[in-house]
Amino acid sequence: MDNRKLESSGSFERANEWISWISGYETEGEVEAAARQIVEYFGLQQYVFGALRKTGRREQYRYLVGCSPQWCYVYNENKWYAIDPFIDYALHNTTPVLASSVVLSSPGQARLLAVAAEHGFEAGIIVPAHSASTNLVGILYLGTKEIAGHAERSFGQHRNLMRAFALELLEWWDAKLRNDNLEDLELDELDIDLLYKALAQATAEETAIELGVTLSRVNSRYERINRKLDVSSKRHAVERALELGIIKQTP
Amino acid sequence: MKQTERRRTRALLGTFCRQVGNETLNVRVYRDRRSCVLERELVERDGTTFTMVFPFEAAETMKTLLMADPLYGLVRSDVDRIFGKVDRSLRSADGQSKA
Image (cartoon, rainbow over all chains, first blue to last red; front, side):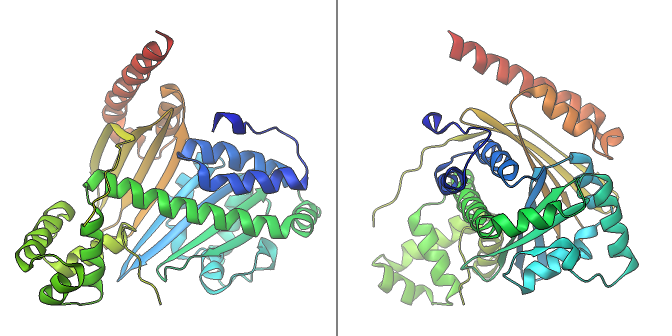
């Protein structure tokens, strides 16, 4: 990526190019550096990108932090993800929106916004990003310390690029997590195929026929997958693989 | 069936885990090619996880991030230990790249 150094100022074309490069980046560090430049092009100062994954009753919130870390610590300490009005918005909408347009429904939410303002999110823009997977949703928070119409102007000018930016971040992070987990767990393509067969509730016999391997190999591989995922059954292996983003549940 | 061979690109430089009341704090630091990343994960009793991801280049930056953590007082010794490991690893890698 060395030949893709970002310049600090840019045109629409340049910003569009930066966004299109995200899929080629290999590390969070590269993506974070690019994201800062893109957010700066939008005329804003802060961002947080969250990937929310729900598997069964378990929820995972994973945030790439492009703002004051103190803000994220405060947010986490107060468990504000449980009442965050923007998460609720992102779960049910696809359209980017000014943060000020989202209706608050509790004093706790008002308190959340007041503290966000103290940490550089005086005004902001919320950009939902939805994936092909039913259990993964992204949310891009863009923020500015400046009030009096600054966020509105940025939103009016860059709304479509913001949407593209959020989608690229979500797809990049989904792929990155999948690859990192496959690497850490040393799972191969046959393991993935077997997990998808288990997700589809295929029997071991059906799986062996469809994948062209012996029944004993299927069974021994499932045992190995269970050990690697630290679970005791095929069903739990599927749940764990979904949590880790190794396999995806599609509609 | 062809099996894809993967090249390991990410190395775990250090990690610690602490039980904090009903929750578990996991901190992991990886080196991934030329950059590093700090993952700070809090796992609630019901399994809900909240993970913050901070890319960084210098070990001092990582320490500053961890010192800002409200739980820092409980994990000070872990932070010192992981800082030492990450700092040594980054210095070693820096020395190799200059050699």
